[in-house]
Image 1 (cartoon, rainbow, N blue to C red):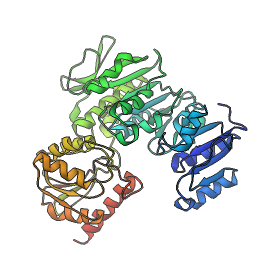
Image 2: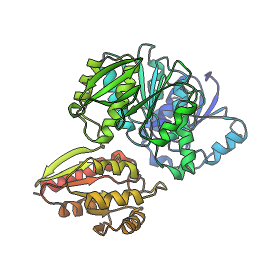
Image 3: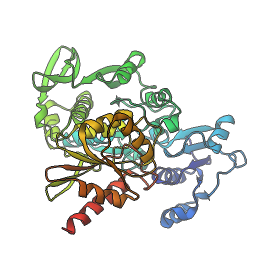
Image 4: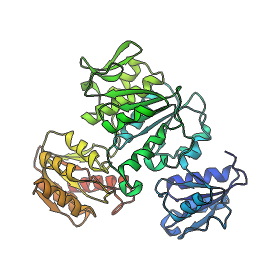
Length: 455
């Protein structure tokens, strides 16, 4: 993409937007950075540094795209396609792309891109570890960690870019084309953003829209909505399954995680020897092993990585054990399906902290799992009323309401007995109380440590 002298509007001044503005300015574009929030909402040093590089800052209101003669709009993931300047740009035929699409145009390395409703972060981090252990120079980022645009142009053809790709990032792509694309699962999520489950799936499906027969699409055979995507994929499709023995693909057979391709069967590892536990993590391991195998990583190296990978922060993360109660941080559980999987990972009594900002989810399946697995439920945040209604409908009455997050942690600790678990798995976004799920998880850990220090 030619950038020098182009008028580019970056909308959204969080991590992705800041990185995009810096990159664009460095390539000679005339850059406008816009956010509906006031300038005081952002770190002064970051904005001052961009101003010194010539970036024009426009905060507190969305500008008139036409009046500024904008050539390209770069959209940060947190900004919906429905905001005024984006709709104006589309109506005027101005290109609107995501930061991930911008970065793709400057990346020479093959890309492994991971999407799905749940498991993206764990699988992305595990795939990154697999390539690192195999001696490859790997960049891991996208929707986690470092924005892709910060490193894309530095990567060489022999490197690998491993990207977590959200529906928000994918919906504004045009040419994005990973060598290997993974769709882990699809359950209703972000309906408030995409309007319907079908709209959400359509955004996710853009991960493979530009692939060809030299590329691979890895799909979950056990997930009906995901399996359907293979019917019209332009790339080579391979499946993984933890519940079925596949004729070809990645599955559990004769007690081993097994690869079956081109008439050859290769065993990798026994599931009990994989470090990360739980049925959902076995699916993540199968998907990650598939990506590594298709990119040339051998069985011994895959086995080593699967034995050693410890998991990711904020996803079923052990915080500490106090008075025989184990505290688990699953702040990454931002939708009901993720929190259902978290509950399924434990066979001990659970005191669950749930609630936050609803994303238009149906909480009834979550409520039914709560009735099955949870000793006591502590509700907090904007969605507390919705979850309470769902658990009542499911016939569960063992819940209490907390006014603050700190009170929720205190309540959960008092309700748990020795040998039990206090689990933060909100089934909701964090934006009613926190900037993101990471901040929510960090605050949870701080509160748990304070609780333990009091004795």
